[in-house]
Length: 492
Image 1 (tube, one colour):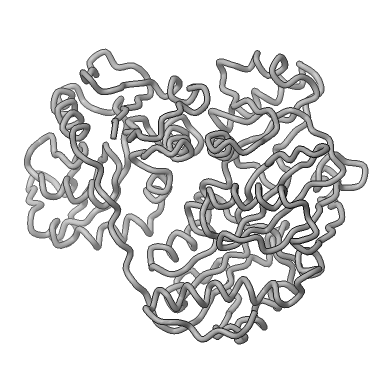
Image 2 (spheres, rainbow, N blue to C red):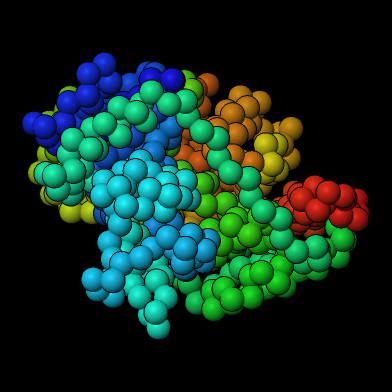
């Protein structure tokens, strides 16, 4: 497997013969996603800024089928106080036995691919790298009541490397490039009582499930051998009391809902939405790279950075559509009809993200929505445009929505269903809402959504109560598999 090092910008001192070294801008701007999936991408950029260059290097490496170090989940985990506390507990025995530093009550350790440039705490640097899997780490320890504890850990970039450590880092990177990639460590098991937590937020304005749908989930649980309880975002400390988590609150990277699903996964329990699906589905740049790599038809699209704004109109024409990578409910998805409007919106978007998406304008009366769950189609519906508007949801006039018309899977065009399942399965085995547009006989993928709407009276128009039993039945099976047996399930 070939290794490529990606840096924020060219460093005159940083040269590694026979190994690819590219800038972040060069990597992000590679046409057709670079094309080579047999690559391990070592991201030496600063990754602390959400949707900054370093963040996108890891995100697009995953979309291109490459192996980024760190991956995006690690980038986000490092922002979690809960994650740092868990890491501190894990490394505490080694810290107690090996960290001896009498000069002060604070100590800073650098780990360059598991190597300590000071050569004093090799085992601890190696354990940090094995646990966190970020190439360049800075860990801060504080002494309290005579005991050292991990206080903070962050991924740093090559620009943060002091001059006296540069030669050491180059040698560490050379050695790493010559190593075979290691496999991930297994996850531990959790509890054995078949209880599922259904997370919802009654205070959020755009709920993915209405109250009746939530109650139908609760009523369906005993039919598949589970107990279900509705929990709110203030119940994070109760999560370990359950065997599975079904998220019915809108996820946001760095928010409390993401912390729920991240912790559920760390406990080894079945979880929908899983953290990886959230990170992938919430970013439209990732989505385009992934679908383009697998030759799934999408509207004509340009990933925009500051160096190619002038290509938008010649490539896509006017009107066109601009999208922030993590826009939801049609928010920050804008129709552009003039070059002045284009410049104005582009500058607004660049204040938030290093990249955004520009797409050709494809007017249709409705969008297809296919619910895909556990690798299979679950439901299909037509989402009609909001009255007098070009989007399904008119956020400019009080979140006015178009009507939803569900139908049986067999009634929908086969190529619509096939494309939806193919696209969703590239993300994972969770519950996804796949949006497609149809123009004549051609079908185009718009996006794959995690946390899709499940509203009583809309998506369940055809299946009714069976829709909720199907969803919870998969949880029951996964809990049974995790426990090494089978949860007792009823008929869906």
